[in-house]
Image (cartoon, rainbow, N blue to C red; front, side, top):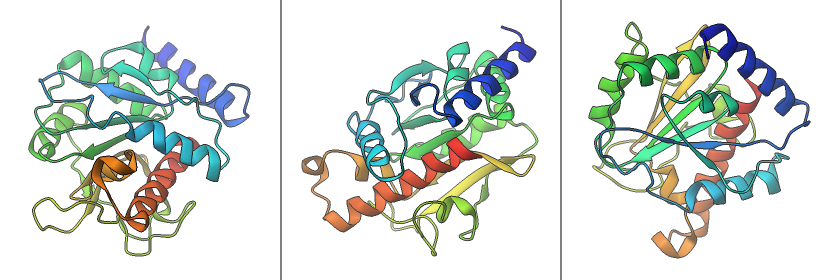
Length: 218
């Protein structure tokens, strides 16, 4: 599918999502490099359930899995990516992701610990002239459904660093969100996996709901 057709399909599909003609869908991004893209298997289904119960979404309960170079990514307004290790985008992956993101798509990358050095390098293939920048705490992604006046919440401890929401903007729209030193996905998982207190898990789910709502509406 050429670039013009990809953009048309994405705009067409998103308009139907917005008006509720189709059930909404989100997807997990499968990437190259050997990193565990499949980690936190209960996280996104739990976030979907929370969103459907609390912010009036109608997302299908089971997220799909898509590869970075597949035209299938254009079916989804929101892609989620996580893992602990190596990430690699080849030229086709990078080109396809750039077309997707500049056509209205949104990519959330949640560092499950160990992704940061790979992500910084590989995103340069997608947007060679753009750096990750910190998303300010007054950005609408922190208040679109639930208020986080201090910005990204801390869910799990990694290296004693503060949580950071790093982003890439395209034509003033946030298109990539990299959540670092927060580990939202662990907070979305089934309660017995990490034994998080209820208030910590609630913060993670509410921040996740903000991300979903922003991706669907902007």
